Image (cartoon, rainbow, N blue to C red):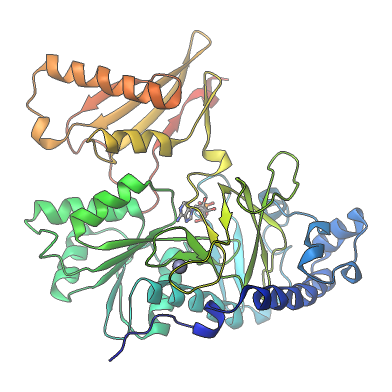
Length: 437
Ligand code: ADP
Ligand code: ZN
């Protein structure tokens, strides 16, 4: 049997001009739908002096008001609904990484659309009917499990709805049922890899061939570690509950940015300070407009994720625009002694220096000054080192971090397995400064 390259070839390889035309048609209709059915957004439009008659295509997008997370909190729980509640078949909710949870609603049409996006991601990672897909994202309110589960069904794969946690059972099912594709957060993939290795499995004896990892930022270094340990190709997948869930964009075999499902989601990059749209190729905040969702169709939703878009043709044949890996959202950014620091920068240095992704950043305040501590596990083979050796390593790692960040943390090397592993989204920063303000 010849493997399929695309899940929906016609749409995924549609010429760019045609995609833009399709987006324009859908946008005009969607704005009318929202204006008519969501009083909150109608008010925002009225305040800006814009009506659906002003929107003739994607070139008019900039006229529309933004929606931010605060709007979703204000309209909680049903104020952004654009259809009667009785037409909805499901809710999902954000993981609440950065505050109060948000609820998103779906009609059956919205679920099908989302599942199709995940199916595109699975096929791009090489999955087909004969594959066994182990879904180890959490199931429930979190979108990770249900999204990849739906996509896997659409492709016709045998789906293992493992959910996250219970690592013993994950390994047993993976090896007994010969799972070929693993879907989970990158931090859980790393943990599963570590556990498989401890049980004597090697890259050659682990049945997996591909992994689809997302829901949190991860570095290129981490990708390489996971690929080597599990003996797979690791694909990135991006999404957020407000826009549907995982599968808003996904990586192809090029592993060079994620194709955004542009027939459903219209992407912009804006200057986060002024709200001005930025030209392609510039770094800024990612904004999405849902083009054909029915129940929860957000227009110009500010994700707070910082990244870059590219229209450069891709060798996979897909024509949809690509977004770079977002290396953290604007609210992940820590300001330490006045310097902007992203956890992903720290992770990149640690992995480059031969340490693992098991680390914890602690921020505090002492004598009106920020304290900045990084806890990192010693690799098991270095655990027996003398105190002198460990101190020297702490110093050299602190120096490497200072070079990268511009400020130096206090580094603490701790015994292997003493930093808590994550089964879902990893929590790597403890900021105690807010408590002391
Ligand atoms: P929460 O905001 O509570 O974490 P979600 O579970 O919907 O809610 O998470 C969506 C967010 O997760 C995105 O806005 C983004 O910051 C992050 N994210 C999702 N996928 C990726 C990815 N592949 N790389 C980096 N960050 C990601
Ligand atoms: Zn591609």
